[in-house]
Image (cartoon, rainbow, N blue to C red; front, side, top):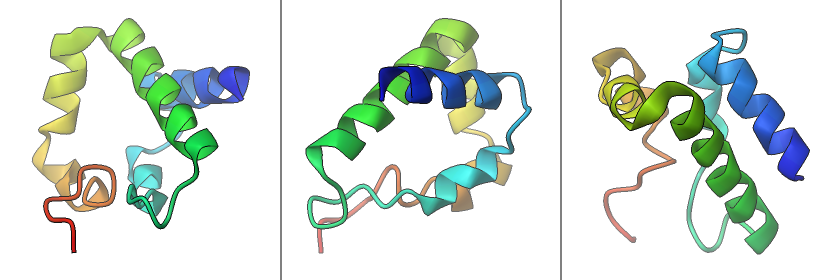
Length: 78
């Protein structure tokens, strides 16, 4: 699982995989398992390591990605 998450992190930070693939993620307790949450954690750790925190924050604040990050960063717990 760790290697797969690192691989996807690498694909994202090199833009070999479009960032809109993150729209598939729905990060809620009902929709995820412990394993999938760990995968997401490792994925974002890999992105932070490769892009740097400033680069990752800049990428995540990009207006074109906001619609794709709704499930990753839910705003309410309904």
